[in-house]
Length: 140
Image (tube, rainbow, N blue to C red; front, side, top):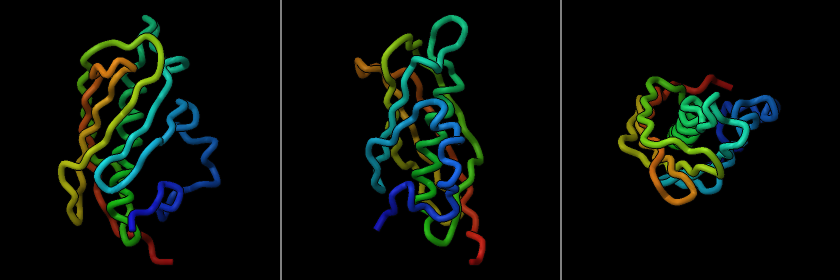
């Protein structure tokens, strides 16, 4: 059975209010082994020209991919980000963006995910790919 994000071994739930996801307003709306979905508001995450900040897109993508990799690795391994690439296709100025994370590769030592971020009209704003290294969890 795939664990929920709050059940992932090694996750520090005590400092959840201090994590970047809380500051950016990222919410996980669906998770299972084949698809993880999250949303993020544009408001509060803009760059000086009024567009959604590319770094916010990257943070949403890395959040979704890292959670998916951690769910795959649990309970014996932990996932840590190894490489993230983002292609920004269009600017978003308002509303909420949605990221959909799907697996490209899930192995023993690495896991790679594609994250498609769309605006409220379903137009792709960003395509990201995240590879995580899966390392052994510390012994209890």
